[in-house]
Image (cartoon, rainbow, N blue to C red; front, side, top):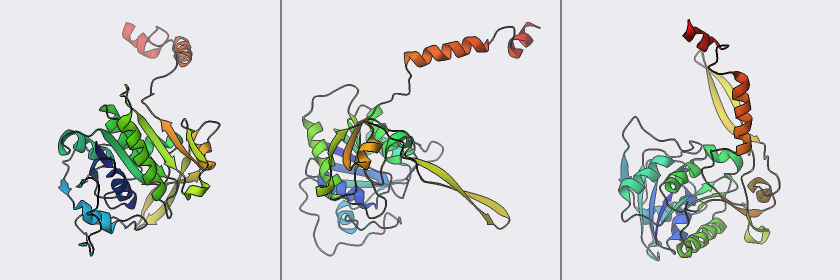
Length: 300
């Protein structure tokens, strides 16, 4: 099995390398990730400037960016040589590239150019902080995974429910177990797209695993202003907990210390009921009838 691993926390993130090590027990791993922090950029792509990519030493990164040692983003070349040979015991090889672009860019470049032969599975994470509810639309973790899903690859986006002192050990085991399960699962169309959130708790405090649907808004935005040399600047932060869950949602189950697995898809379409409502709205609005200014002007 070959696995593409990406993320939005950047090539230096401990969660990425925790996932890489655990997934190497399942198959060969190709890591293709942004060269810096890219949280909150959703599925954005770089379309108006070139992208630069370079290969990085995976075994050195495994040693330097071990779980629990998240390091502030810096040059992807700034890696110490390992003092001990602690990464040569990998069950399967790991290769790695850093991309000067978004998480979506990283996944696209990997699947279209960098990774050959093509992977059997796309994994995005392990993210530092949860990705639940409607907030998945701004998640770079989910945005990267989406690029695998729309290209027909089974895909997992996985996150740990804390930004401060995240625990990656359980999430590493979860993603490896799901990868094994998908390796033996029959193909389905569309492919599996799983959004997984693991509570930031030790195993003995985990209530179980729940299959969930997306909740509502998990976090809201606040805006801070500051004056700088006669100009006003605005800072947007996602720091207002809303946690609009409900029975069967990822938000509620996660609050109860369940590992949540949410099947995802591209359900931007709508229901028949909503279509009928909008049909009534359009009829009442009398669009392009003589009573509207645009239509009246056209008949003059």
